[in-house]
Image 1 (cartoon, helix red, strand yellow):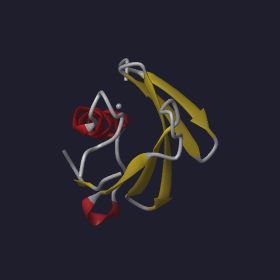
Image 2: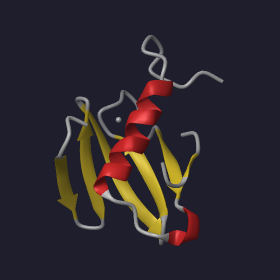
Image 3: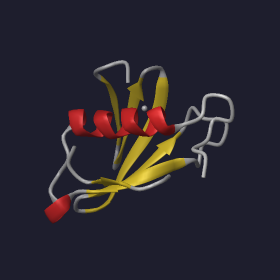
Image 4: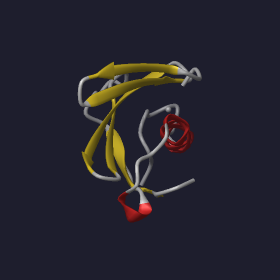
Amino acid sequence: MSGCLEYFSERCGDIEDRGTDVLYEVDGERFEVEERSPGNYAYRWVSHRDPQYGFSVAVSGGGAMTPSGHREHIREFISLVDPVTGYIED
């Protein structure tokens, strides 16, 4: 996976362009992805009980990330979430 996962999921192929943000649906969960600067992405889990909950990713060298790269990061994030609490445990 390119980039590094920082703290803070796609039925493959469901992408909706929302201007500067892109909405991904991964495994039934919806994430809004915003490119904050070249290669730096913020992910908000908009289908979560707290729609501000999410994570960020920085790609080495500031390169663009592919849709499949976004899906990978989202799936990795979801795999870390406790299904009981809905959050990543500290």
